[in-house]
Length: 209
Length: 209
Length: 209
Image 1 (spheres, each protein chain N blue to C red):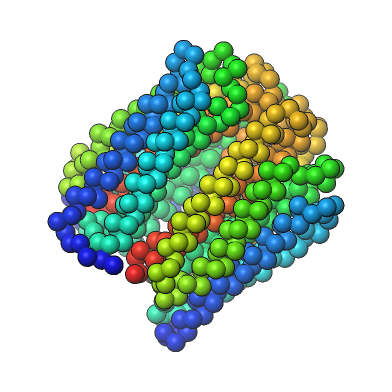
Image 2 (tube, each protein chain N blue to C red):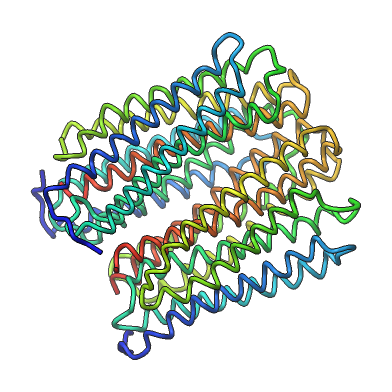
């Protein structure tokens, strides 16, 4: 099963960088939910495509892990990292799909704090695209990555809690509250998955450096 | 503390196969929720028994791991695998218990999409019973296991989302919506735990093969 | 980057014991929610302080892991353990913060079953302070730790389910039900995080002993 050797190392890092790009692409589409009169159905469909692209990427990576004799990082860590990156896109796709399925387009606009959650996700995606390429070579500048991830996750938590306060304030109908809550939970899970990515990266860094 | 040697290897695989059988037994009981006039209390009580059986099995496995010098797989992986298998039964037991505790027997029938969630769990349990015995010997046919697990998890996600759409459609009273949502969440968590099992199995396979 | 050697081993165990003390301190503050006329805002603010203290502790630990050549336990396990201990405080802080943010002080008292959840958390914190110091030397008395943790987690589950039954009984207004449910979920997550701590400790014990 295993036949390639060290020279192909770079391919593994390329996979992770491509996953980061997919996430950036997904979050950018998601952010259109904050536009004036967004096309909810289209946003959801385009995110399904991005998520499928990333599923295929992840499977190609797993096959490569299986067919490579010497891998640049621990196999289990690469598995974990690819899985967490995939989780981010799963939650983003789910959030947009629920907005569409629940017919939340009937609202004049999504709550401001929900748009703030998406703004945090955009910042997390930018951070990921900036720092994940440093994994190769274990650049010591990487340490800022998890500090910054932690800060953004706190911003995300705050937006989420403030959104809950608004949802439970009596401003919306009960069923609308429940629908918005489901979407908010997926966005919060995406935000947490970004932090899980940073934990795996940190743990790889700690082990290998 | 450690006194046995390689010859007892088979016992570890037997533990995992027994856990798969417990899950199959549990899911079969759970599926009675789709019968005409099910006895909700009995279903819940029988599932508590299955879950306790599996708790005891898990503790026997952990003791065996501690008292064996050479184990056929990495200790940590065996721990993780046993833990994820146990999670499946925990969520199944919780789902049936909540149906009973919340008095959902007052409904003429559970929503169709909830029964679909259970149908997916049955397919996952069958798949597990078919493929987990291949772990011994790292049969290369195993690779279909995680592909198929992933497919079923997507089916489960779809049933779950369609159930939410129904729950938030206004068909049910608010408190009933909340109760059904809790049950749906446990079923979805059981479905996710099956996938977590497949991830551990895949990671063991990748490492050892 | 790595310059210290074995003699500083004790510092790692001291970090974990200090985290256990922070948790004990946090849970004691949280338990004031059961007092007659508690000051919800103050409780929340004091818990934010404890959580920050523990964040700093965790970061100091991570830096120490990075700058130490020979660590007394596997680096990844220490990372995981510190992370799970931190999770406990995150959920406790979130629970108290939501009680305050949602204005639940308007209720004459929190539901009895929610106070029971907190009582379980107190017992878990006591257990942690008693057993975590045994990690050094892998004291064989530790095995009672995870048995007892499992028992308490079951108590916590029971309190949580009984609380849900009360919340969905029609006794409270819908929005109040939703708010209380959010708080209950954070308390349940804290209870689960304690069990996750015990799983990491058990896995370290299994590996190292």
